[in-house]
Image (cartoon, rainbow, N blue to C red):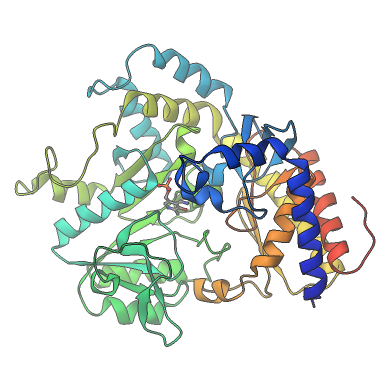
Amino acid sequence: MIDRARLTALLARERAAYADRNPRSAAAYARAEYLFGRVPMTWMNKTAAGFPIYLDTARGARVTDVDGHEYVDFCLGDTGAMAGHSPAPVIEAVTRRLSGGLATMLPTEEAAEVGAELARRFGVPQWSFALTATDANRWAIRLLRAVTGRPRILVNSYCYHGSVDESLIVVGPDGRARSRDGNVGAPYDVTQTSRVAEYNDLDGLARELAHGDVAAVLMEPALTNIGIVLPEPGYLAGVRALTREHGTYLINDETHTFSAGPGGATAAWSLEPDVVTIGKAIGGGIPIGAYGLSAALSALLSERSDLDLVDMGGVGGTLAGNPLSLTAAHATLRQVLTDAAFAGMIEVATAFAAGVRKTIDEYALPWSVNQLGARVEYRFVSPAPRTGGESAAHADADLEDYLHVYLANRGVLLTPFHNMALACPQTTADDVARHHEVFAAAVAELMGGPTTA
Ligand code: PMP
């Protein structure tokens, strides 16, 4: 349906416009010769247009770059800013904390209140803190290996749980497990430490768990890092039944699926994981990760005098549980990402999904739109993929880049890794309307229609 020559020409035109429009960002990028890859973190080179725009300020649902352009931001730090950029209650609380000690190795009273709030929301009662969701996953995995004495972890194909060694595995074209492309410097062959099943494939999961060597299934209740892949009826109940049957623990990684509601997909869908991991959004932009354990699991771990959970046992970090992260989480959970805020965000995201569907329908494009609470994503395939593998097979880098750079040139940001849009408490119906106007124009030009933006 897409005229590829037309797409190539439009993409080149938009990239040239981007370069013209962003001279200060281009110059900053050119000057950054002492940064590896010219960026503070290599993934910042994931941009549709050759160099990233440079941040000046961000507030609420808006970003302003160093060239003075203002954007409606649907990327929201790939969920790190789901509470909006620099939310006022977090800034106020963190500002107070900043002058009161940051790295003392002492607990603060607020930490217990954050634990209680996470317990109320996610249903697992015993919480511990990290600085990133990656580390929360790593440490949860270690605890579950220790408690089961089993060596392997199972994940879904094309999941993402951070740079967790055990998770960089996919189902290959021959149906067999293999290392994910680009698995940099793997410490060992991932097929020796991990098993993998496609999402929504209970037979595949049953087959892999039958080996009896899987300590834990680490999964997102819905995949969010290869488009959004939603559970089919009965799938998540089937996962829970199979994990119980095989003596395997279940970790729900709610880092992104938190968008489903105040207690993530775990609460929204009444799930019963043994462990919940989370990060990013709960700190309102300040680094934090967290993992929560069921009462039974924490009791089992506490009884194990052979496990060093206090000193050098492989779980921990000097700045983990620091006062600043916990102050930020306290303010974010209590005052920003409240039940009422979620209701508003989900309403805005529903309007986002409806508008994207309208344009897709107008041109009868074979694309699909999925929504998970405050998060929406479209994929270039219809019906929506059922598995990570299927979703990965329908990636279209040029088409994605075209839409991203077209939107950016007209003041709208999506997450750079895929076609994801997230609503924060400050995202408005007007912001969504602005996106739809530009998105419709981008599609119209691509399909040979009139230019309207
Ligand atoms: N879990 C999930 C589901 C994620 O999407 C991510 C990152 N996108 C992580 C964990 C890791 O988060 P971080 O990079 O902040 O450690």
